Length: 294
Image (cartoon, rainbow, N blue to C red; front, side):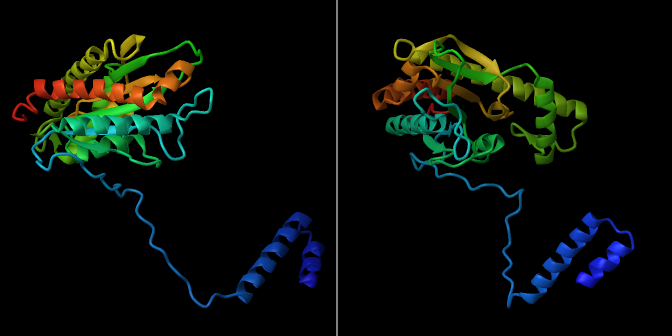
């Protein structure tokens, strides 16, 4: 080996190159000296594989409406943090479980949580679970944060019209692959007809989502503290669905000591869950989803 290095240097090869070649040669020799007796090959799952679906709880009657509750964040994504170290992912899971309990006690609807433990879900996986389960309503629960600790109160978000063209285009591409939009077959339709169907469906879902959001505010009046501007619209990824009424509820500001303390209180969470569950029941009744349910 030393002779080969000397020859290389004598031929004018830079010393850095010679050193690198020497290291590679030594590594190669070491590797050949320790050949394994056998090799274990592990098949890794495809990156396009869908995640498993969560269990559905409640009445065994599959005709009963299904509400999917999404606890925001989770796993390596803690979300926002409170002044005392509170983590949004922990608070949202507790709120989601409280809402599930309130709905199951009503006995009128079936319920599923996107996550019932501390694991991470991508944004499109969350609403994707609801769509795959053919849910009647999707509710994502969060706990906001603000630079000022004076910001307090709950806020209800629905999908914004802003940027709706880009949303419609993206959803149209996905729905074209599925050949349906809100139950309407698109196969064989022209691009113009498809665009109209997508637009109409998107408009209908926004109206339904806003109607539900208004009910959350009404049922929570006098029971929950809302932000001074409690009804808002934003282009949240989890709300971008053509055939699923959706809302994102910020239960409060985790950056506010008062809100963080309230959200950490089981009694307050029960009050929050009762208000939202009441809004869900009224919304589903108004849309005739639970008209036949006693």
